[in-house]
Image (cartoon, rainbow, N blue to C red; front, side, top):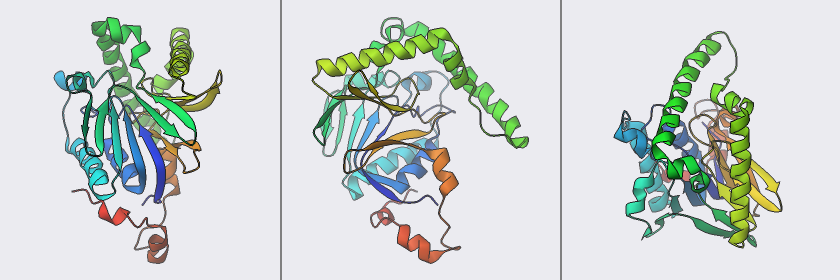
Length: 276
């Protein structure tokens, strides 16, 4: 099992529930072992675009929603859901607040004397905003790449080779993709400045990152399709990126192997979270 940790804040984005490529099972396992006071779901959690077409809702997707409800009910976690472009159906209910759960278009998160502008990031994607049909065509291409990537990596596993992302490689090689990402980061940083914020937290481009950009702290939570990454904040305000695939390499022994170690590592509140 994964080692238990508790954080001040966890940010995840781009889960794309409703698609075959969504790693909902892994995310549920991650959230059962990594609890927090505040959970920010930063857009594209549910893929409404895909569900309208060829998408399919699976049991593992429901389990993710269940653990979110358990975190709110049992751990008193505050959950903030930021609308993304693939879950734009939320526009019909924004803003919405029910107890410790809220749905917003964007959000200013204040922590340790720093204001972070939290937004999914699609507001600066001109293709997504103005030519939705073209964006959906591009989405089909990305889905095809993920399908091809799965076949390619199944073969690599049989050969004893590590995972290799075709789509990420293409993003880093194609000049237009590199230019887009650079422009995306620049626009978000400028927006954060205009909101009197010293940091920006986003998702959308599936590129996890933490760095200083023109005096602004830029944080991107990545995705749960390929990167399987999350942003986590310690009590002192320090941020880091956690990768699920790296965490499972550091799994602690099971109860059967070492009950004493298991007991010492368990978070006292985790026993309350049980997913059917």
